[in-house]
Image 1 (cartoon, one colour):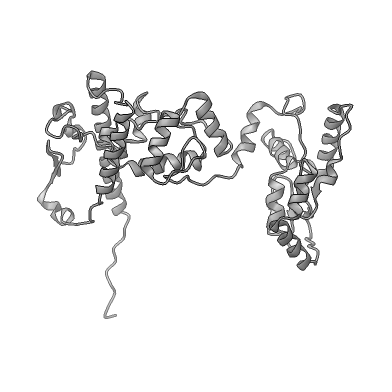
Image 2 (spheres, rainbow, N blue to C red; image 1 turned 30 degrees about the vertical axis):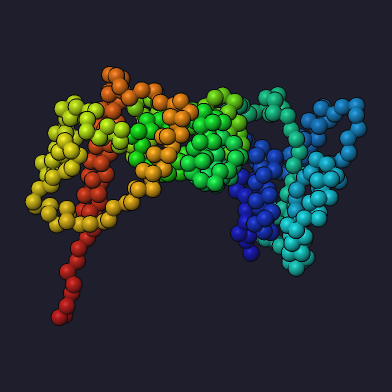
Length: 376
């Protein structure tokens, strides 16, 4: 009989899923991960404990410290730094349920080939100095970071930079503007603020990525929030280069801004539509509407319904009023630089629409049509 819960890195098997998950958090497993990156074989738990003992012996001070074995919950496999923490854990409901479950399953687990780890290895504090790890370097720390569990997405009422939770989305935007000087860029052209905030919530809450660094990931939500507040990165990287703006292009509409609906801010001649759509089946008018060829009438007659953006428009009106009350007017909506940015973003929107249309047409060719076989 083989176990369903194993660790390929450490070459061990486990009696249950809880013990396996606890093993993934131990220093023994992390050390074997680093050895695997360096093309070295894993070491046993006993050898790892010997290395730990040597390190602790070198770092031992004159002050006597209580033994860590007395602060270990043998049933749950958790290590505690104080006696009060251990006592509180023993009184917790989770520990009582786990102990009750362990008593019900008294039959020992005996696989044929793999070694059984009935208890996780003790979690110990090891110095992060390079001298303590002989055959590893600083770059191997990313292996340990990559196995960290992904977090949960924040709600639209939760602040991106602290633990404050508002009663509504517009109140949350005002809180982030007052406390963290976070303002949405080009708010006059923003067409779906709720979807944009949800995207930022997933970026920070799930992937723990800084909004300004944009590619730097942290271990948990608290770490990325501290980084953004300490470094002053409570802002979106939007105007640095077109690649950064491409991430948010779906949430903006630069065709006709809300504050001046009768004046076209972008010269239509600046964007060569023929260079975007070369099929000849669609023509884009200056008003933003598209006229299709009659051969595609059956497709243009399809009606998928329209989204009701009234709530989003009302929300944006309230947010813009609050921004103006705080004295925020953006980085300016005039000038050659801004007009160039609008042309670039508009080109990216049209290129993206054309790319998705081409992808959809190509996927339609993958559908096989068969004639129904009858009268045989």
